[in-house]
Image (cartoon, one colour):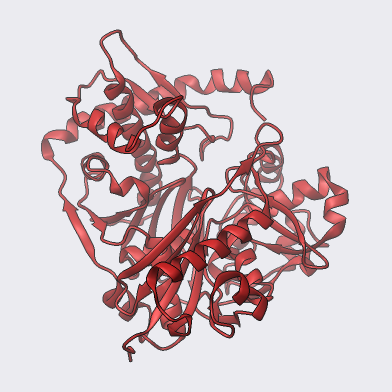
Length: 505
């Protein structure tokens, strides 16, 4: 039964920003504070972060959020954290940060290809996932091969949100959704498996794996030291937390089998819930967050991060803009779509088909302006989502509507482009911070504030807008998608040549 005056703190730790968001018992946002983190690229394809900075930013975000809310920290019933999946966050044996590798990293692309060739089918049979560049065990295997001195110091393997949970509680834990989402669980019953580690070449790594908990299970409580750093009350429960794509689906209102979530964020996330795991080697991954709850996922780092790059490198260059994303949306709205508009490949960070794919504009003419370039970015991102969704549909995961979340959902144009291009009704979640809200829903489940996930989603989420597909645009997007895919195939050889010449990691 719900409790008046109860608050839940949801944290969302992405590849760029960490956000602390306080919600009341009905899922209404009370306060929010976010901080940008700094990534380092010490070598081509390497994307790393300073874990001490991550924790410092988390502490500042939490403290500032609580101050903005003006609530007594003792009123916060529990804390939940969601974080980007995969990558590699290593502690040494003493519990100090050893490595922080983000999920945009492609250094281990060659090793992933080796593992797929040698053991891809065997790995998929156990964990329902094949190796890919930033997959956690693939990165750990790369560390073992290329940085043996680092591997020798390793004490615990964590993921992004696990590091924050560790600093809050002192507990070295991870949850089912993150560990299954990174290919470290056998999916018959979602447990660790020595045979799986052996296939990755990590037969000696079992001691590095953290204690495994359910996402909504209380993993520990806020320590005195963490309370001083964050402003939280010592003793506040902290749950195991979530793979952020699962949390974002929950926070947008998706929880039942057959429901679909599309997230246009740093990654293109396309997922359908089911009560059994779908076994199809063409699908990217399956994540489990309860014995009868699975999320079937097609994803790649090909979504709204492309627009963020465009804004950072081209719109904000050398000047000051009060609303750069608003400027981009205005430019897109001024363009009347045509079949021969430019095409954009959203492969700034590679593709799910090949880490060596690269971004590019194609078909530019002298009469095209910035609005055409930006609309090409918007369409190209949607087309890569569509390609992923075609894989899900091919695996038998049909759906007739979807909820869109992530930064792309805030655009006045992107949701309709998704509805028209995917040819399904699209709803946009009311909550902007769906990842943090999903983690807060888990915290509400853990403390008995709500009866379970369905009750939590029904009580704490709402939809803001609904977008129906425009039948007049169906032919336009079918033609454009065919051209997009044909251009992708035509560029394969060029990208491979660039890669062989050392232009890619």
